[in-house]
Image 1 (spheres, rainbow, N blue to C red):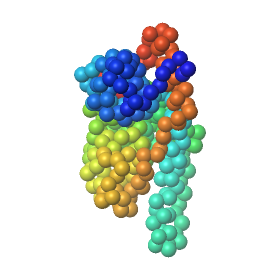
Image 2 (image 1 turned 120 degrees about the vertical axis):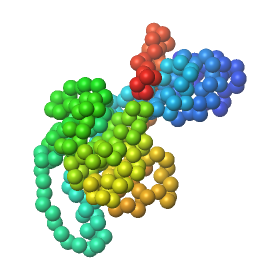
Image 3 (image 1 turned 90 degrees about the horizontal axis):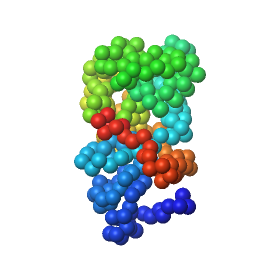
Image 4 (image 1 turned 135 degrees about the vertical axis):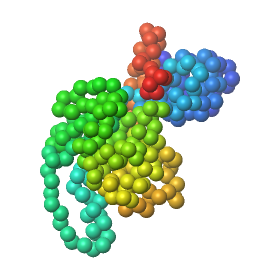
Length: 288
């Protein structure tokens, strides 16, 4: 951005902070943004902006989240990889290896398994395409009706339970909002096909932690691949580390690509400077 002056927040004096119109952020301290009273645009380099929305409810700031095709492609790759991990019973074979047990199990082709996606935005759509290419049956759920080729789409609370009852692997890609917090709860685990598995690549609070542990301990849920948690890094004494039904990942399913993200942010800022039009901003009522 040769026409812009890009400075770290810590290097700005009071006058520069007062004059600043654009902030590029990841997980900023809210007081830092409040210290720049003339901000017109806050551009996140993350897809999730729930903390920004929660920390700045009264500012009226226009918050733009990152919408990056590379991020969607990376997430879709992760969804397919860990779906295959569960589909091919890798956790069970890992336990057998630890027990020095040689025991093959029957193979089921992907066409016999239903993978259901919670969230059908850019990440969900890209993931659905990958799963369909791999031969899985794919369902999807969103708050409002969506239509995706080859995907059996469901919407609203009244359709969620029916979809869960057909699900072998549930993949969570929802944004964190007041409406989605705890949506994967005891009722959801009860509605899932017995022996189903869970992948959470969204946000930790979307899944009720206590209900998850109870479902695993009861054998209702076979395995959970968790990349996100209520507290991150996951504390060393957290139950998930030692549970045989859990695979713990350190929030790596879809990291921001610095090269593509930088280009997208720069292009959005350039268009804003040229036209005065702010890119599509976060709907504060919806939370994303």
